[in-house]
Length: 266
Image (cartoon, rainbow, N blue to C red; front, top):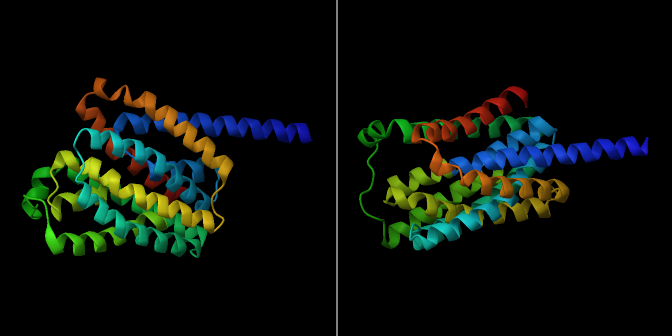
């Protein structure tokens, strides 16, 4: 019996690692954080408790966002002050969100997380495919926000984005990028790098809060992190070979599928 259990455990470990390799390759291919899709795979595919899945996804994002932020910083694609102010507010929001999540029943938390993931797909669709419509209906700031307004808006919006990430495990990248463009006047080419800088302290604070609450499973975390990072490295090599139309489909489709799966099977 013990040998059978050991065999099944090894198979599950290998399947989890292999699944994260594939997911990591997709994340690297489309250049997206993939926290929400990771949560969907862990909960639906491997029946990991939702609170544990949130903890693992947030903790894993610390490392993926760190490497991405450094890369974009070297390319001068990060507005450091804007990112730092939003990230400062995000730390508080992530702490509050993680502690809020800790007391929410699993079934309710899974449903809300699925809805948030699906709504982020809608936001990405509008940004990718309906840019002209967005420009007509939402006034996009043409120059970077500075002074007192930068601090006030940065802290408040950072707290809100941090709360969403901490409570529901999603990186909130779609919402942060939209806010950076509309509210803070960050040029399009700098929104991705600045967004990664914002998510970095948010994911660290949220991950630590889940750790202190006893929700982080280290074996699952190590397998997830290793699979995602190795897979993302290979996936990133393929990005420049793919047509833009295909990249857009994957960028919108991944969170959409993840959200639908979580809503239907939570």
